[in-house]
Length: 185
Image (cartoon, rainbow, N blue to C red; front, side, top):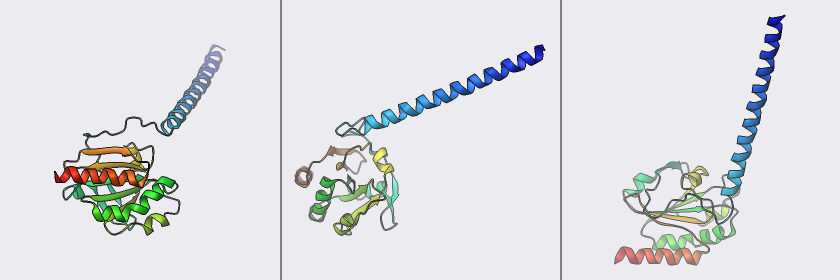
């Protein structure tokens, strides 16, 4: 009789532990979802990389399947990382201006798209062989990018020189003209 009561109590304790574990798991899921929603609020940039920070190194495949290694490109020249989304109207306007910008640039342009499933025909029509195009959503997390279009200019010492969101193609052009002026003076 005593053994039966202790077995019943043990079973009840185990059931309570399972219920508590499920409740804790559910709360953790809710908190994670809540924090994800907060991070996606437009205009809020949590823990973004700043000017002077070391740029995270990465390896990725471009849209043609060629391996791209940031560190190797930085050995030759500065790199402009332009983060876009296929569904962003401002990004589309900026992409249309890229051929003009890339012809004047004294750095390598890498176009990084977080949208791996939508049609990117507009992007493909407006890039030339001097622009590296990568579809890699994970790089948005690596570089802590929450808004598009967003720009990082990385120098050959692997430091971020410019870290900013852009509102229109003219803003990007002016920023890069200023960068060219600083580089020549």
